[in-house]
Image (cartoon, rainbow over all chains, first blue to last red):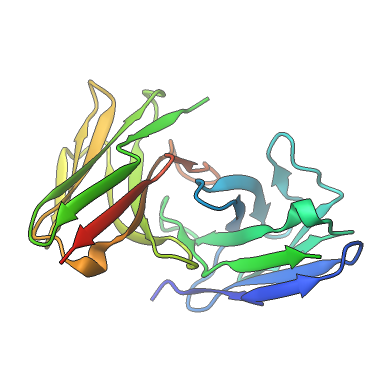
Length: 116
Length: 113
């Protein structure tokens, strides 16, 4: 149980294009999902908290207009990197917190984004 | 806000030895402390967690201890195996609901056969 999937696992795009990453909780409902970014050999950096049916809460320094988050259902959150640039290349990981089950977060497998 | 420090940054052990990773946190209100294992190119996997009303928790070869007074918690892996090689992250959070995790900087564990 507690499986989180992400799609795609890897994506290469040209500078200036937009990329959408999906995060799904497969066997539980998640009112709250989180989006992280991880650079090589570094820790996870929280980008935003995604709440079903409401606007996402962004961490300081994260541009909400560049990283669009939609959490339209209890099992799906999407992150869209708009007008991607090479500096946006990173490993993007989502996590989901089962509704009503306390603090535990389960992470997806991550999405490797490379912007050329 | 919460700050989590993690040591060591790298740890090399021989197969069968024990490994200990330590974390300290700054916010005394934190009450949930998970540990994650991350293999290369993959997402973090929850391996064990502990809440502040418990001092120790064990799951087979893995154990976590918590000292609330000193605000530190540790991961203990006994009888290490090569497949334990990975990066381990500690984290801390307080309360429930939307409370976010604050992660440590990670420990790269290498278990040599």
